[in-house]
Image 1 (cartoon, rainbow, N blue to C red):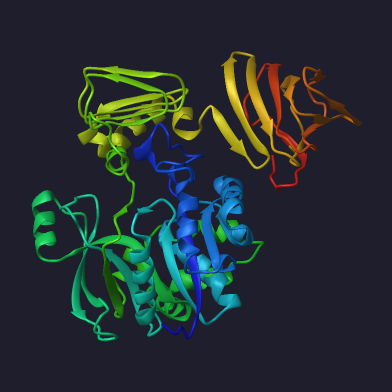
Image 2 (image 1 turned 60 degrees about the horizontal axis):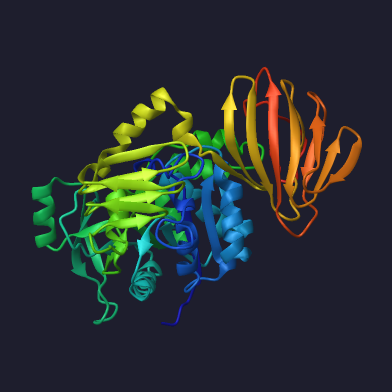
Length: 470
């Protein structure tokens, strides 16, 4: 195909993935995890898109809390796209995220044709996906809003459906149809009928011309169109928070007149439950999927996943067992879609377990909480080569640091010095201090915090190369 436009892609990298708890949590959701290979879902999505779009034309929308982790992961697979990471100050559903990203692209390239894709989906048939994307661009270039519709292989109740209409005659060999109807997630009987009648799953993937999208936004969501145009650095957070919480489907796709769909069989999954993770992994002789150090006896048809320590099972069938350092999930595999209800209960009784892991990732590296109780906390801190923490102070705690490996450059008030392996220092309460790794290997230290309060919010930052505030 000879394109008469410039191609761009937007990756939507939001959401908390609560149905994959306890592995997926608020500050490290499923798109930032490696759930079906060595790369994370975000990195897999990025590599897939790079087969059809230049890295410099790839934009990613994420939450402010995930910005540095997203940039770090993109730097490994598409470094030219790192400067195109857009961080939302608050979650406002898919239409505001897309509208903001489209406005950024349109300012630099009015001839853009844009594909929008989720960061947390799995696609096995990449060539079929790329061909469908390319086909969608034909109609998008004629001002259609085009969706990729998945040809269903079962009557699933977890997806919305699209009823394709008449074929659009761009090329006799291309499957490209108008859209007759969007349908909400059905019950089993309706889903069976939809599959028999040729309906498609709604994948949430869109292709459109930037100018056509802006025209639709002005027609169907005029207030949002004005808000997007009015965004500037000074009013950004306030304006973004005022956006309606509305999806792309409800806000535009179900209202627009020129809407098309490309049917595609690309072995797609939204990886929305532990059962879907189970379905996409190789099984052993007992039809189990295992990850980590697992010992199973008389156990079958199960997903057995451990991130730490030994997981041993006996006499189980059709279960999901997920073990992390601080939480374990055990459930019937057929009930994995209902985990959101369980997570809501966990959030009431122990909200931290739904938000963070014991290992927390920061732009400079990571820390792992080894033990915590009243008036003390013990961490293992790893600082990446060339990285440094902010210059900071604590009002309520003092810290003892012991270097485990690497060379630490330390600032304690006005004094800067280095420590080697097995050397230690003491940071008094209210002292300005900084930890830095000027070496070429990771720096690891053990930190013991002592004080009347050891919460993570007891930080006053004076200088930070990552632009974070207290």
